[in-house]
Length: 401
Image (cartoon, rainbow, N blue to C red; front, side):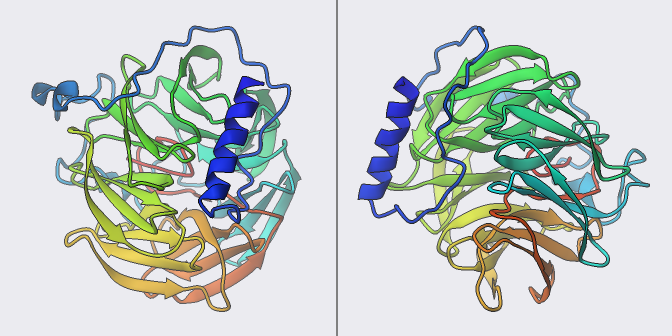
């Protein structure tokens, strides 16, 4: 009941701020979810000093993390068509979790047609590639389960019990899956292959949702949607270093590390733009206005552009990563609600879920021209475009290095 009261209080606060029209399905409060009996270290809730990340740690990679191919571009392995042997023969598909339909639609990238439709668990939120690229996981949030997909066939294989899997990431050494248990205010470290729970870390962070890792893999920055915070995690020690507040009234969403690793970009749906964060000093150093409801962040295959989905504006903003300025604004013809997505392996098509329109959009990733509008189930969310270039997956809907 304590968690329920907390979520109701946050909901009332957001409503008072004029945000009652968010129609967000992922903040539903579940009943009957019982967390495993594990240790829950107390997380710091204050801003860490600059010394929280010692200078001599910067650039020294997390032990076990594959070496960065290019110190100036952490996405060097994500170039167009550079598929790993493990995925080279996987069919080019788009996996769409329909949160309110409790279903998964599978779209053929070449024909823009649905080729598979499956019932999954309650409230599927994201489809996440495994660290080794050999499996896909449908995260059934309220179903307290994960549906395992075979990317070679595009079909479900089995379902395993996992508590409150709103989102999921993998530590850069491939050892752990970090299940983002949003409603339970926890980060659950699980064995990356078996999903067996190893440790739970409590967070003082309502609505913990999205994350990315620093270039050296030693730290992760998570967004806290309902409390307007960012959280910094020591990956190896599985310990929260501290939190900072974003702009007043802000609601941080997706997080993306810059190619050179110097900053992180955080989409903020109430500030209508992207915050620029110094992950080492852990503070905001800039802001880029994009559009109403800034939500998802994706980097192109050349590491020159950052796509920002503006869910409430029905548009996509393109930021030049060199100048940190918006160079294009693409509007979905007839309106839309672009949310989460990803790029095709060749980098030519940007696929996005239409959260409030029961659609998936396929856009020309160079011009923004709408190539297809595909009807799917109700409230499509964290779709996964697969396969994609990269040596390993850090989770979410496809963060590859």
